Length: 191
Image (cartoon, rainbow, N blue to C red; front, side, top):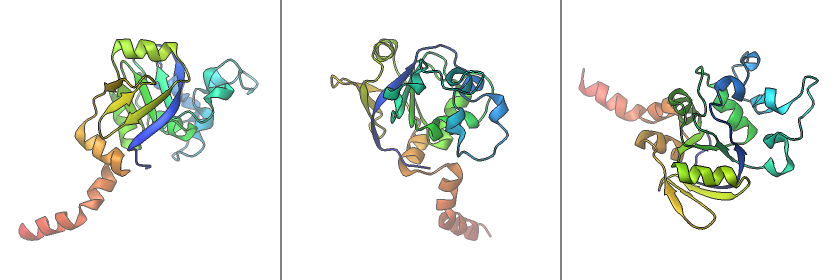
């Protein structure tokens, strides 16, 4: 997992509410157990026509979306079934953070465990972001702030353990493995 400390990027905006995990990564692409290549299938039914050609009017297909690492989405992003493939697809596409007013709990959990930062902001900030696609934002995970182009810093919640894992680029298993010596010492005192 890539650590996240700060991130500065332009945004891509998908203003739709209730974007579910099947829209993020359609079920027909869930046959793989690896993360690589899933970015090509992210939002596949919206990005490509029936022949597989890119739809030029879809936000992710526009030239200005290239290199953007922050996705701004409508309310209730990531709802639907639990599938780790959804954050995998977004990460493989190049996103490192998703911003909305509401992010589904299971999607949030899967994202944090895989290195994608889900950021919940207030309605006013969200409305401004939806109206200004392509703006450059700065995210400071340690301070839990998202800074707008005018310098306004907006705080967002992130649980302490998830923050630690993201800052250090480790998942839950990686964290436990780092504690190997302490676990061994504890087990020796319990014998």
